[in-house]
Amino acid sequence: NAGVTQTPKFQVLKTGQSMTLQCAQDMNHEYMSWYRQDPGMGLRLIHYSVGAGITDQGEVPNGYNVSRSTTEDFPLRLLSAAPSQTSVYFCASSYDSRSYNSPLHFGNGTRLTVT
Amino acid sequence: GENVEQHPSTLSVQEGDSAVIKCTYSDSASNYFPWYKQELGKGPQLIIDIRSNVGEKKDQRIAVTLNKTAKHFSLHITETQPEDSAVYFCAASFPSNTGKLIFGQGTTLQVKP
Image (cartoon, rainbow over all chains, first blue to last red; front, side):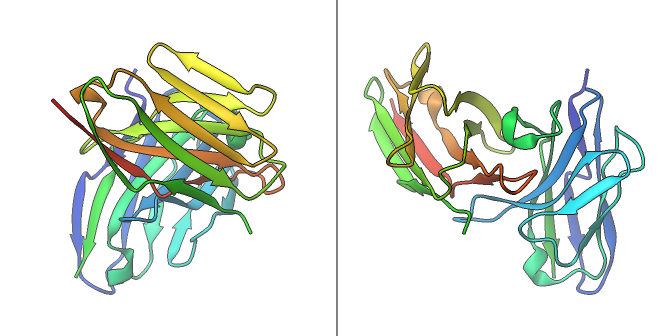
């Protein structure tokens, strides 16, 4: 049982490049989400999904796309990277689709630098 | 708007002392308040949570208290140990906005041996 797995662990991009951050969970959780962590700003919600085929925006969705074709996977796409997207990205899942009512399980993060 | 404020941003204590971290939230409808601990290079991990129908919850050296009237909740760690050194995040649910768990800014706790 691996929990929430994120790849890659580190990534450096040039401005304007695109890439996909991968997230997979093996706990059959309905709810999955992406957060970014910046110094002094806590964890901010980018996008979330309450089940396969359903996604919605969080607090800071601009510049990011998501899709949820399976229960297990929830990739985050950066369409055209900008230096402001330099951050640590965390994927999290929960057994309850009402994420506000059950614990989140986090991956170990992807550290992204955009130059 | 939806907001969670967390204080202090850094906290340094001697081993064996107690540590207290406080959070306030903006929505009186919030009903779930988890606390997460993040060790260096890892993702946050839930250490304790409390729901709005309970005023206090304890788990060994960790306790959380909730004051719904004042809209604030606190994490108390007693008999601190060096392995308690980490970043701690509070969070609050916002049921009026499905899928939203809003986090505080984080507190870096240092326990000096």
